[in-house]
Length: 207
Image (cartoon, rainbow, N blue to C red):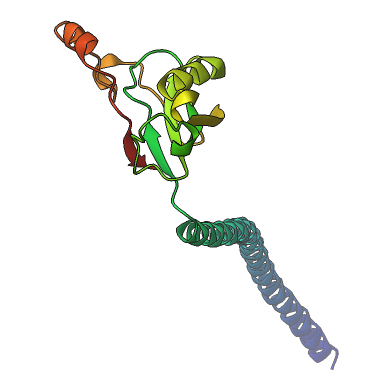
């Protein structure tokens, strides 16, 4: 009886040892799996954070693009409305004041009125002149521009210079490079001909 109990105790002890080893091996395997899962979870967390950061950046870019698009649409609408207003408005015709030479100065805009009845002794020479005309001329100062206008359009012949101001035409300027200038510089042979030639009349041009 005692021997049987000893065998049973020994068997239980061996079974306990084997069971401990098995469960320890299982615990180690589970621990390794948990460590791998934690590492994978950390990597996924980093990817999620990077994705969230990229999304935030894309969302900011989208909002900025949306603001710019809205602003551009408003500007286009305003430009279209302005264009329609200008289409409906009266056309302003500008005249070039004689011949403009490429010399220092700036462009002035002058408003000149012609009244053939103001000089009864004079025969009307500008039969097509109705109301006022706007002339574009080049001068150093406003005073010089007025002097040029007074010489070209004397009051005794029925002319009246109403206003002289800086030209409002956008982008009107003189190219300082002679070869690229839009104004023709007289050659040596043209000097004598120009001296003998009378002053040229203004050529009308639309703004």
